[in-house]
Length: 166
Image (cartoon, rainbow, N blue to C red; front, side, top):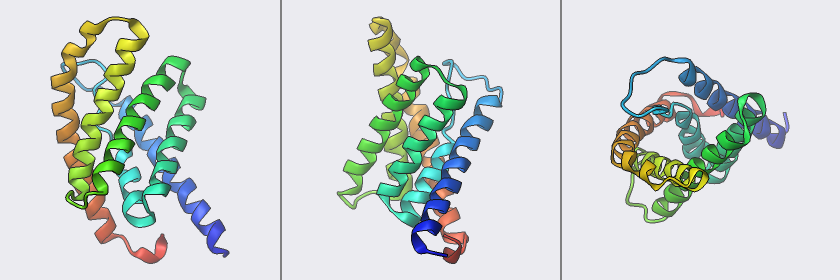
């Protein structure tokens, strides 16, 4: 099979995996102190892509997942939240990755925190209610801890799954 087509198929599969993980995570009832808190399981697929195929391909998977979920289940406001969180997360990880000081778990932790900051910024902008930012400390802590976990999981998968399949 042509390498370009193989790579496109792999990106499509990883995007589908990220979308499925997002959907499954949304279906799991969780009792968190802040409504809408999620662990970010889809980021395992994004981080796996980052480590195996490169950061540009990871950005493609992340953006494609956001757009796919919007087309299937979303509304314009949910798209704004998703884009705000994903953009802040990706930009933070891209900036930190250039320092070569962070492991995948470290990048993911920063990305998780940045994702929540982006979403709170969108919420404040959309609603005009700045008091929403009061939940930011809890969200940043949760995003950091979940980011560490998803980064570690992605690193384990990269080490354990054979390279020839990607």
